[in-house]
Image 1 (cartoon, rainbow, N blue to C red):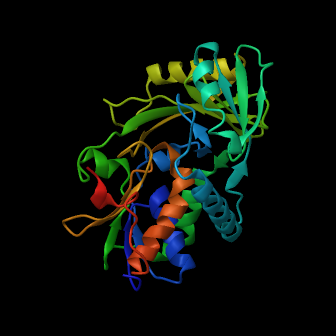
Image 2: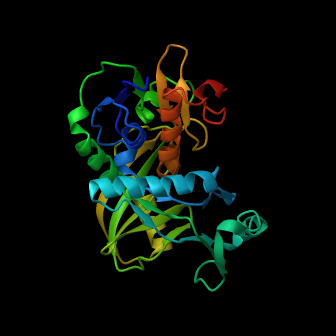
Image 3: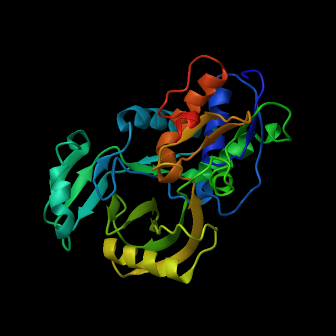
Length: 313
């Protein structure tokens, strides 16, 4: 399989696999259906080291984060673009959730820079290192342009990097896909940190522009923005940044989730090979997982159980 491969789907997963093949000197072709609502084109590219209501360190963070940073730096150099923007993450904590977060501080200690308790409107802010933003749209568009000469129909073994489309169609059995809506905002807020709290996040893009999000909807898996979604994200933006902003963009996409936000790779019983399930943490995991898939395709290593699609229940 190292000699020829066809990548079906050039979102985040497919693009990362393409680069890993390229870095290894291995050939491939690719195709994509150019869906405007795909998660890779909509995502803010947020990398958050400690996540969720339970304030848990992201799965295998110490392993995958350095791999992702090196990967985006290398690809960015070839594309002539900056793709990785490291920023501290301020995890804003309300009074009601402080006891739970405080109980997890020791576990997250390697990633904590400081705990700020003088934060208006919040009990505290836990300042985290290891966070940042990946320019996912620029990465995918730049990758597709770089490898345009390899675009074409399948003539070799295919790896299906379909994202939510494949999951919603039932090609991996049960899934937990969720639609999310994101706003692009113009505002005069601070641009030196990512803010997370109140059920959402605020990510600076530079030049007074921000991404704010996001909603989670499990029963309407389309790429259509809604008034309800906009209202919810505007509420998040006011809570995190303030009331003075202008909405300049509103997008929706479907997160490809199989189990939490842990991806899966490998062969199915019907012979198809898949790379899917990046969820809301694809920017962190896609480069390293693509590298592991490339190594398995070259018959250099086995797929570890934690990533193997054959180990799904």
